[in-house]
Length: 249
Ligand code: PGA
Image (cartoon, rainbow, N blue to C red; front, side, top):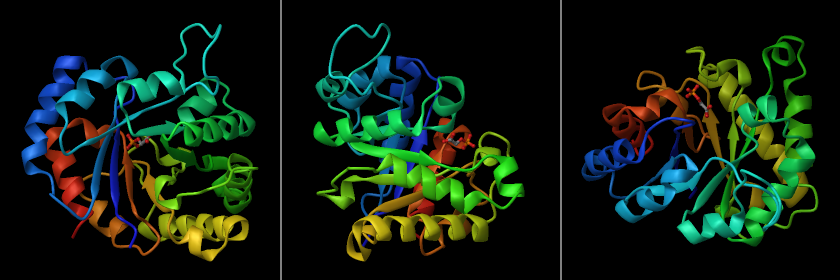
């Protein structure tokens, strides 16, 4: 009942021409149904990408929580709506680590995204030290609870969470499918405490962190993993198609 999502997080990669070439190359080969392929691209190419994509759903990688004003260099939800993007990644660990995004700020961004009908892909995940000292669940519970504090979820199918252990991002060292499942299942239980079972069973939870063509099938076979948020492997056309196909098999 939860439609799988394979979301590529391109980070600070690809020019407009490269992105359009990518879209035109992969679109004919993507599954026609049973999953959603999403590309979260750099803001400056979103408009052109949206225009060229017929199958791929397009998302941004960040958004300011304010609607307009004196925030040099930032992009507002109104601007994202204007480009007709559907998704927005919020609270990615790189934003938390390099741009000091706090749980409170991420909470404000989620509220604003939902207000403007943008579908948030909310990232949570522990760092290596937290995994090693056994506090993973405490961290996940804090991040999820604070992210959704005071937020009413009217359409659970429009809210996506990505479990991304920080130690697995860009390291080539993916969580095992058991570790990923355990964390995604725990996140769903935290959501159930806040919103009830019915809502929590409709929210899609993705795994992210060194997903590749070799480990994708096993990760996607887990019951609480509803897709992937993929960085490095989403940059290659052939790999992106393989990852998307693995979501429907
Ligand atoms: P990775 O990145 O797939 O390159 O590990 C994942 C992410 O940062 O979302």
